[in-house]
Image 1 (cartoon, rainbow, N blue to C red):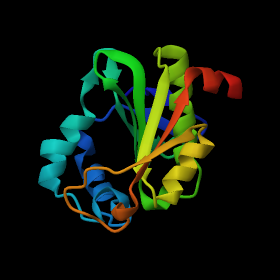
Image 2: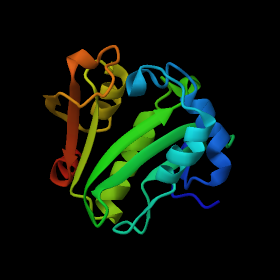
Image 3: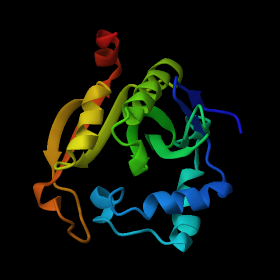
Image 4: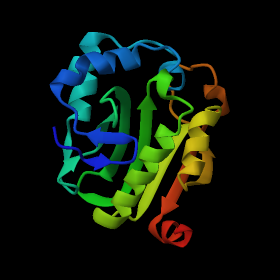
Length: 186
């Protein structure tokens, strides 16, 4: 499988149907899912029927996917995934950045390394003008990754939570990085 992006320690590659078990293991960890759905596991059936098709989707304006399986470059171990998806399928102007890594990968700088590489690729190769990312206001680890990746706090907002989860009462936050701000950081 050809790599979409390689860094010193990561390989980001397109998902395949063969990734279903690794995705189930990732989404079966209550700590990984804590700020997504309150820690509820995702069933294998849901991974195959809903999660994997979303991750396999191609975006016309990129001519490629918007979600990438993350592997450790030295071992090929599945670490999780990164999202770098246009908000409008037909325009690369604004993309959403996201990441979900297994717990053994936390605190090792993988999320920041992958996010920075995707941001650079988006601004230099895909015509991206603005990168946005959001999380629950109480998710300090994810917020720190956004900040270390160059994004700046934009706003607090209240998301539409069909089922409240611990921390959702504090709302969500949005961060952003524009191409011009990114160029000033160089």
